[in-house]
Image 1: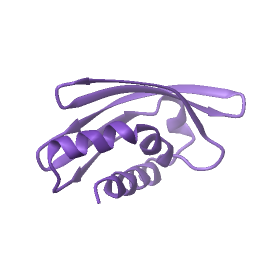
Image 2: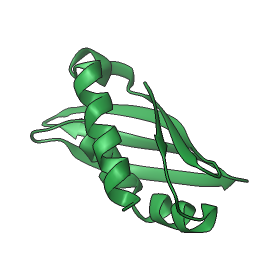
Image 3: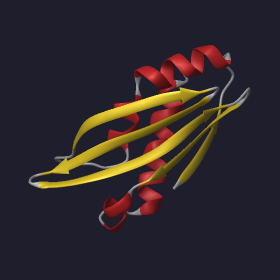
Image 4: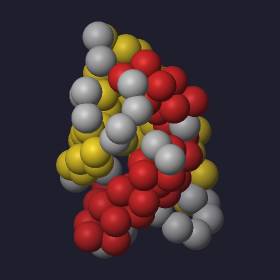
Length: 105
């Protein structure tokens, strides 16, 4: 799933917001009793690569992606792995878009 959201902040401001809020962004994709654990992230230039583990009850599923901070937009590419079969893609994309816009206001 890939989402692009425009912004009017400096790249540094957006990078800092994204860095602080990775778990919140990931949690916005799903609803219910989803727990996000094992967050790992690294920056390469303006791109943050990350991995997370989502846990629902005893079921644990890793997922990964990247976030590119551009001059006027943020692009998030998220591979939900096994969770993709449990989450409606349009609903997940809408939730992620709302969350990113909330970070950038």
